[in-house]
Amino acid sequence: MDRQVIEQKLESLRRCLARVSGKCPADAETLERDVDAQDIIALNLTRAVQLSVDVAAHLIASREIPAPDTMGQAFDALANAGLINPELAARMRKAVGFRNIAIHSYNAIDWHIVHSICRRHLDDFRDFAACVLNLEPL
Image (tube, rainbow, N blue to C red; front, side, top):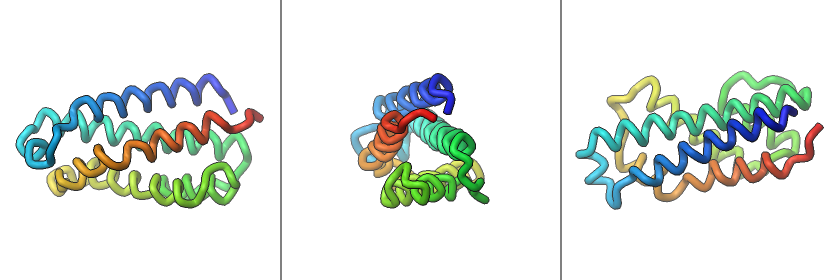
């Protein structure tokens, strides 16, 4: 595993999460009306997911874990290899689901759900980053 590459991606992830936290309004109704906040939050959440998937793919490749078929399955592969716990893998799969909606069906985004993600699920990304940082290098 190239520790420097992983650490750079995790620093980018940290910045995305800080941006989401900083721009998320106090309530979902305000988010529904604020298109600038919507854009900033959606972009940074999708980046956070992509960075997490990139890190997962890097770990999979460096450990010769069989390649998954989907982005969400990358987290299952890490859980099956004992690198993250299955509950975290399930939460990260859900994040990939959000990313897919944000990228492919932007008009269908439910901003109340996005607000909930911002308020209740950013720690999923932080937990993933912490697990990665605690892994022994190969």
